[in-house]
Length: 198
Image (cartoon, rainbow, N blue to C red; front, side, top):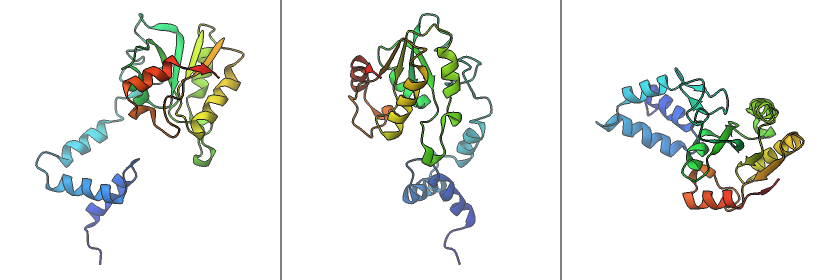
């Protein structure tokens, strides 16, 4: 006979599917929701249900937005000759805390054959199409400094070296295996300043 009711077990299983949440953390989160007067399971459920209802990808950079085009792409003061390629939307938020004022492109992942992530699963075609317009002078590849990030950077270089005049890679001011979204402002600023040809 199971110790916990199936409703609790199901919530623990769902929390465990989230990145960085192990079984113990999932249990703590579940029981926190049960006993806390401030954390409302109803509010959390509604917020999660609404998460994908109105959201869409920016038609230009693939950032998550409510409009057809995100606020960065629609900002006419941005440098439109430069694109910073990142893995996920959280990295756009991180780089927006630096002096960078070009445009972005969000891949929504990296090449990882073992995880079934090829170019077709990423927003790679959209990036290639943007670069083919001929208006991009520099493409800065800011994928994480790990095996998958390097493979993705090399793939981009191979596909676009004849199309974009300058393709650079952010400097490795970040340690190998680190995630960009957790880096501090100074580290991100230095990694942009020290970018190198790819």
